[in-house]
Length: 396
Image (cartoon, rainbow, N blue to C red; front, side):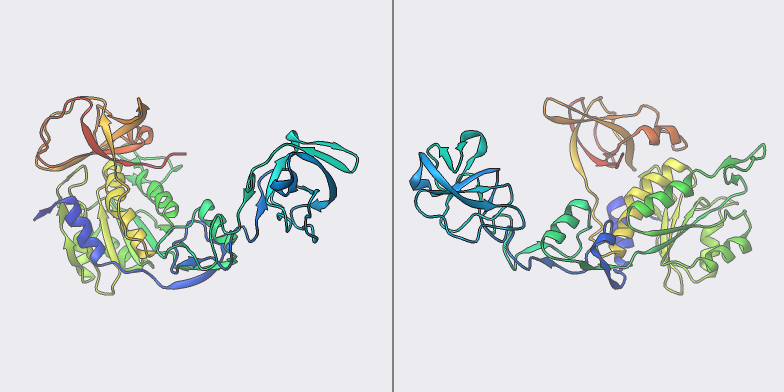
C-alpha cells in the first residue's frame, strides 16, 4: 500500500472530479453558490457625479460668497436646472450633482439665511463622487469560479444583476460504519459511542455549498455496507470509519464489489493515514475517511472541502497562510502532520499555538481550535517564532 503525500493525494482526487451542471438562480438565493459565468457591469457606478455629503452644490469659482438658493437635489430625484453664477443647490448624500456645479460644501461649513447661503472657499471636485468611480459599464466585477458571499452579492446587485448562473450543488451522502456507533439521543450500549463525525461532516458540506444527506449508520457487515453504498443517491459518497485494513474495516471490500477503481489507497498524513479515494463503476466518487473524529475532520479539510469546491467549479485550493509558531517544535517524522492550533495576533504577526495533546480521538480539542498547523514530512526542529503554514478554520 503506497502512502501518497498530501498534495499528490489531493491532486489525484481532484483529477477525477469535474464541475457539475449550470443553473440560473435569483440573486437572493446565490449566497454560498459558485458562479458559472463572469459578472460584468451594465452601467457605471455611480451612474452620475454624486454628492458624498449633505450640503450645498455650487461652482467653486463663486466661493467664498453668499449664494442664492435655487433648488434641491436629493437621492432619487435631482435638480433639473443648471447652476449659474452666484447660485447654490441644496444637496444630500447620494444625490446627483447638478449641471454647472463642480463642488460640494458640507452643511456644517455653510450658513443659511433665508434664500441665501454663505459658503467658504471650495476646491473643484470636493466631496464629489465621480461617475464610474466604483466601476464602469462593461467592467468585469466577478469571475466564474467565485463563491458568492453577501458582499459579492451586493456587488452583483449594484451591477444590475437580478439573477446569476451558478454550478449545481453537489449531493454528498455521509455513511458512518461500525457496531460501536449510535446516533444521539439514543441510549448507547456499554461499548458504544455517539456518532459525532457524520453530523459535523454534514454541517461542513452544507457550509461549503453542498447538499449533505446523513444516512443511517451501518453495522460491520459486508452485505449491509454494500447495500448502503449502492443506495446512496449522490455524486460523492463519504464514509466515516471502516477505512483501514482491520477485520472489521469493510468499506473498501464493499466498494470493490461495486467496481471501485482505487485512485488513492492511503495518505502519508497524521492524523488520517487510512484515508482513501476512488470511483465506483457507475461514476460516483467515494472518499473513505477514518472513524476517529479528529482524523476525519482533518482529512475533510484537506480533501473533502477541495472536492466539494471543485464539483461547484472552484479550483479546490486550500487557503493556506503563514504564521509564527508560539512554541518550539520537535523534528517531524516521515508523515506530514496537521496539528490543531489556536491563532492569536501580536506585534502585527499571526501566532499559531498548537495544542499539546493531538490525539485523534479528541473532539474537544478540535472544537477549540481555529486552525490546522502544517508540519511537513521530515521537517527539522523549529524554534518558537519560526514560520509555519496554517490552514484557518472558519469559526463564528
